[in-house]
Structures are given as structure tokens and as C-alpha cells.
Image (cartoon, rainbow, N blue to C red; front, side, top):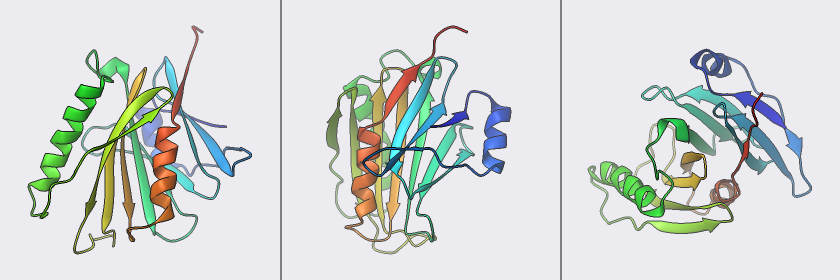
Length: 192
């Protein structure tokens, strides 16, 4: 497993400059990536073994963003931003609060002409629920992406915000990304 420290601004800045190495494999053709999110919890994401992963800081919030991409080219991008419970208000992972946050995010996107409403879909996982919506742009964005999934997933000690960008509607990577988010889990750290 690859361990990445994400609880200090200096460490995050260093992450943005350093390439990441591969993580441990699993029988299903997945690699598990372990990200230290806070002093108390780490995030484990199992991504397809051939996906690259890099870390950067969100320029608006200074939160870590883990970006998964194809081994070559730019046919898709999956961005995951974990927010630890230490910076969130109580009940952050309650379904209604997560859905309200996603509805707010959706409304910001729909302030641009989009045509139709975007239904919010729910998914369940062993350790928490999640929500997402999909958007199709009639014109590709500056990176060439036309299809977007944006969502939120609650874990006991963190909240995951995620975005999936693809060039084609039926991209296999969309399903793989949703499975990665659905299967996200956390590990708690004991006192040192």
C-alpha cells in the first residue's frame, strides 16, 4: 500500500511536486492506495491497477485532491477530495446533509444553461451512503471532457467529494470510478 501524508500544508505542497509510485495489488486487478487524511484516519481507495494517481492542493480550499488518470493520454480524470471530520460540523455524514450539499453544488452548475434538471442518485455501501449526479455538456470543456459525474460520499470520520470527467458517455471508467468511491474505506490510527 502507498501511504501519503495529508495533514499538513507543507506535506501537501511536497505531494504536488513529487510523482507517486504504485501501490499494493489485489486479485481483482485493483491497487489499494492509502492516504493519511488526518492524525486519526486514513483513506483507502482501490483503483484499477493501470490508473495513475497524483496529489495536488485545491487552489480554493487548500484541501488535498487525489487525481486518478489513465496510464497514457487524458481520456478521463477522477478527482477525490477527502475532508476529515476535524474540519466538518457534527452530522456531516448524515444522508440529508450530504444530499443538501450536493444539491447546492448542482445548483451552481445549473446556473449556466444546461437544459434539463439533473436527478440526484443514491448509492449504498457497507460503511456509508453516497449521492451523485451526471451532466452532459453539448460542447466539450477546454480539456475535451463532455461528461461529468459529481458526488459526495460519507464515511464515519471523513467526507469524500468526487468528480469524474470523461470524453464519452459510456466510458468504462465511469463505472470503475463509482465502484472505487463505493468501496472507499477508512482506517483509524491508534495513539502513538
